[in-house]
Length: 603
Image (cartoon, rainbow, N blue to C red; front, side, top):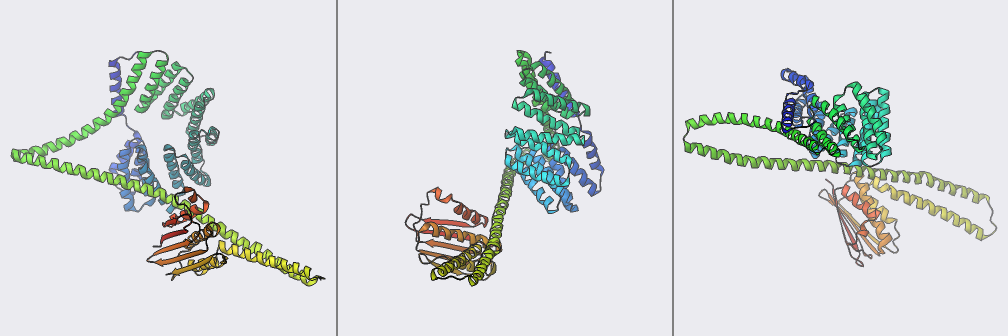
């Protein structure tokens, strides 16, 4: 078939009129109901549903409706619908490519759903977050949110959503080239959808499997699954999905070096895309049809297909542009009539003055609007970074808490387990001593040495247990706990001086534990590595802040050598300081000792 420029223009005009006249029955009926409905609760439900329907196809309209819904939800104190509307605003921002705003809206919805224990809606929001991170190729974070959503849906035994998560999360592993895991997830989704007899879900799973095999170059297997997908979608008459499947079939035929079959598949996809008002798919299909025609040396037809693709893309822009022009024209006509009344009542000089004033106001208003927009963008970016920082802080808190719990468990096991066993050994030895007779002093001395070793072992177990979870810390606070800890260090080779002031009351338990670990690690570093003869420690609390100074006269180290800061101990100190929003400074030189200065805000 040959396409002339006149025919191309006629097709273009037909597509424009077709796209402008086509309307969605469901959105029209809901919109009509919204114009007549006066009951606030029903209006809120209509705004919620309409904004969701428009989120992917008309994001700006979706945002307008969702914002109207937010105001009404706040008036009615309907927090759940409020959270759903924020999620819809996130979806609209996602389809507009404003991912930082989408993330902010999703995280806000997550907080509300968690606060009101709405697990099902929370899981749906986790799924939207996973898709957002998948879009940005942050695959590990995407898997994290898919797993969170899956946990909830499995608890609810919601097979439909479980199938959806299997299917969508499989794409992440496909991106990672982990084809085996991707296939397993797609296949799990397919099995569940077959049990549920969910033909729509079966079609998407089969389509994903076909794309997977196409990417792997296993074209026969891809064709098998795609044919099954087409068969199902023909039965259920899913026009949207069917048009996509035929487009995928055309791409598969191109991979199989069958350009004529590809052309036929793309033409079938186009016939369906025209019926459902899908110009983007039409444009994409014509572009691939150009490649198919080129592969058959039909260069003139290839050029015509390519021109059709570009014209349709331009038509989409033209439709939007014509709407904007009509709106601007209506606004202009209104302003023109008002201006004519002014001109009739004013002189030419006054008119020029008014026009100049309008231009000046417009100029400053434009500057103000631009400044407001930039400020809004900066605030949204800061909130997004704050949400990420909060999530990282929660993760750090979980790690530190798990570490302290493990220390406490080990300390308890040492005290209650090993300590009790050592005490029992001593009692048994004492009993045995009274029953045995030793003929010489050497045997008695050996037994006394055994008693001495048992006593030393008991003290060592007790010391280790107390260092891991000091009693003084739990009873009287950080200053006393530090003194108790330092009192157990051998002072024959290391003189230790401690000064504390301002500790009139105990700090929060978590803060005291973290401070104790920081000081403990610093002192251990001095004992193990510094070869110092003097250690001075100062703890001062004043004005809702805590200052700690740890100074030794040891061998010091080179601050410019980054390897000195890569040890587990130093990294642990810095992570705890960061968690407490504090600051740490090292002052050291080889042979000049070391000063560690720590500042912690307590407010």
